[in-house]
Image (cartoon, rainbow, N blue to C red; front, side, top):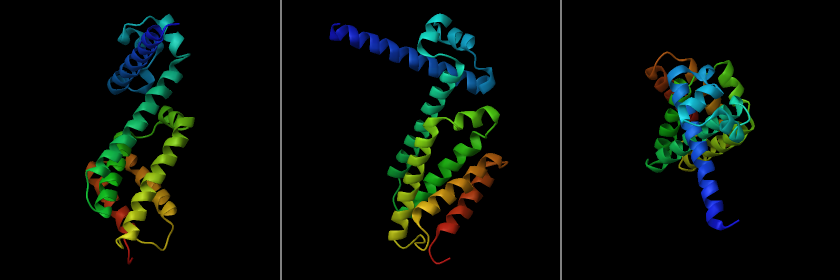
Length: 189
């Protein structure tokens, strides 16, 4: 097959995937996870259901792909925030707050829990933990954060603690949780 043909087919596949995930995102935002069906996604994208099935075997596969895109988008957002902030503790604080706000805005439910059990989450959680660990390590090197506990343990503790943000009633409560978590990481406690 000529390269141009391959490029065109791949571009079409990518366009169908993006349209499908964008339509899924809109459906989830408007009606929730349970509202996503093959019929609704096909209608929203203008793609026939039979064609949609060529790309995704079922609605669960669409939801997993959409969720994976969401998760890695959040990781990219955290990296951008880190890169725009000076100071090791300040970097950690903006990243922890952004993470906690994501948890607050996307509370877990039974279907959300199912998505979080997928294989892509293991890789994302490892990346997130390593990312937070590196921020804690930098803070410990500067003397601002504790070094009496391994940074990997502190990263895990922090992420688990901030997971509770999904249960909190307000953004103000989320910010207080971040402050309490960060206080537990500070040196000289």
